[in-house]
Length: 469
Ligand code: GDG
Image: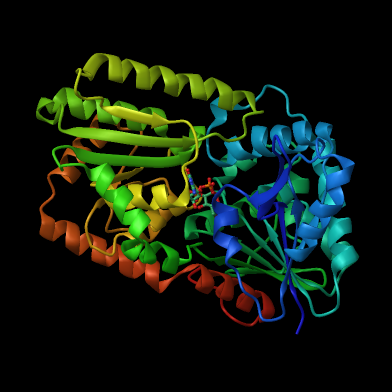
């Protein structure tokens, strides 16, 4: 049996230079979290960028390389210029906002295309050098849209899958993208192209029709030498560690500390600090709750964790200041000497604390303006084996297609979201239980192992129908 070669911009581990020595530690973000627990009978090989390693002294590099090899990973190095122009520029400065419909942060001029091509070609080189007949290749995400076709040209008989972790937007937006033909053609080298939702898959089909004049037969398309299939595979989580939180003494202790004497209700938000996650409008919705329902003043607080992310991209540093200012204003307007409405953590929290926040939350706020899936929503649900807690979820998160028993909100409607918060805080216990039971059943039914299995199965058997397209 062949191996599964996983190709993603970031390895599931990152090399970072500490004050004393260099560490190899788990990478942040949803993709890494979802794929870390992946098992494949023939074994896996990971190909990706290990993070900015330029500062690692030569004396430690051998140790780092050995550690990466032990973990089954193959590093692809990026120069500082490529980090700026491929990663921060083209991938995170153009594709990320455009695919999330946040056109306001797009630069006037699209730059970094040469580096985007060059890095995709370097990844192709690394995959070809690892590939053995019988291996299956699975390429991930928007950083590597050109890679499937580059691999198809070099390895015509290989099984190549591609999965997009972010939304695929309407073809109206794809049409605005310089290099749209190359990018769409790049994806089409795969045998299977997977998305989180039916809507994204539909947008992809219409974009290929519009940009390349392709003609689909249902979910398949005949290409020179191979058949392309589009499928829907909603990513999920490894449920077990989240359910186990219920019996972890450290988590229980922390949960009790967060709940305190129960006099205050707790709202929780946990996100990467990203303009797609809807943090400013969420803060305004909370403010609206406090203004319109004054009875909650002193009786409810919001803990918002925003993990620093992509700090090299200008739009992110501007956005950070916007949140700082909003938190300051809301706290300034509403705090009393005994109560602070918003506790804002611009840092990541350790796992036991993350689990305790999920368990202590009366209401979990997942209100992105746009999100491919959003794993935080699924993690929260999996943690609530007590069948309590309310999930307030944006209609514009991919997760909303599955988690229909959540309280769904339009995050752009700030006052409307504030009213839904009031509704969530006053929801009767029986309704909370019914909704949470139904949400937990969805997440348990389709976990990350089924997700992987479904995708790879579809990739291995072209005759097999993909889910629900
Ligand atoms: C992309 C897509 C899609 C967050 N803060 C802390 C922490 N986290 C962990 C969460 C979760 C992950 O980070 C975030 O995952 P998301 O899915 O919510 O978001 P993205 O990073 O934007 O992921 C997204 C995903 O890819 C997978 O396809 O769902 O739509 O944008 O696992 O738990 N973990 C810890 N401390 C923190 O402070 N330990």
